[in-house]
Length: 340
Ligand SMILES: *Cc1c(COP(=O)(O)O)cnc(C)c1O
Ligand code: SF4
Image 1 (cartoon, rainbow, N blue to C red):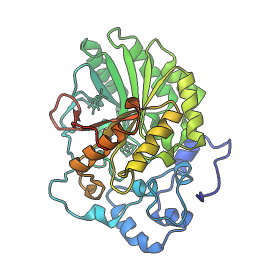
Image 2: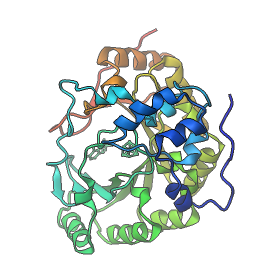
Image 3: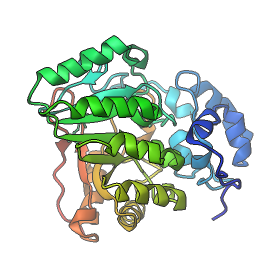
Image 4: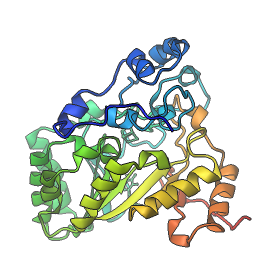
């Protein structure tokens, strides 16, 4: 496999790598030696939801392959612009589950804190591509409000840093927030849902570890890897750092047509996760978000795929196949039976 050159040098901080993300479709095509016939549709589709991808992630893509599974997750294409009935801007009704600015409280005992509106990468299938994040960039007063909400509800045992991507926030903010949460006695656990270390492994620094793990709260990090090719040596190193700090590391993926919908892709992903001490947690059915229809894997195919994984992998390496249903009290599991 030929990879794009220029592994990041040591002096590349995550902030620099983030700032130097590729946002021009032509630049991405050039880096990967791809046909400029892809440019017009990419430019048109990037109009509503821009291209955004950091260099360390591009470095794991194959040159000259328009079907590369990592490229497909980030390259805007013409299919996004087709109007598809039933594919809407807010499939989960989250714009209404906002209990307070910055809080999404849908399930018992746990809630999401929108710690940072930004993401390091714009994933084309994302159910949040139309989310009004600007309303969720909190002022200091709003942060106090959000913390008051958590303090006042003793049923909340777990706080989940979410976004956007929560690790787009700086370490000072994360450290402050984590200390505030640790001072609330009914909060027992902290969870971080992030894709940032996957696309920029350099995000995992000793400052980050100190910010997240410096209190009494046990920390679980749920990464978001969709394909085995995302787990390169630099990400392995970052995951070792997380685990040696005592974090539990899990993975959630989205089942995506043309990215990870073949049995061999899913088995390779689970095995690569296992090699790195990461437990597969969820495999999500695609949300019916406008512009993402071409990524859909139908339920019956998804159920068969995970059924085949069951007969080939140890049980703990088979993720739970789930979908989000607006108004439901948890993610909804699909019933999977073993398939030869
Ligand atoms: C996914 C999600 C959670 C966490 O669900 P778990 O099943 O505990 O992983 C919490 N709140 C919201 C709004 C979610 O979407
Ligand atoms: S929220 Fe997650 S899936 Fe969506 S664009 Fe950001 S990193 Fe990608």
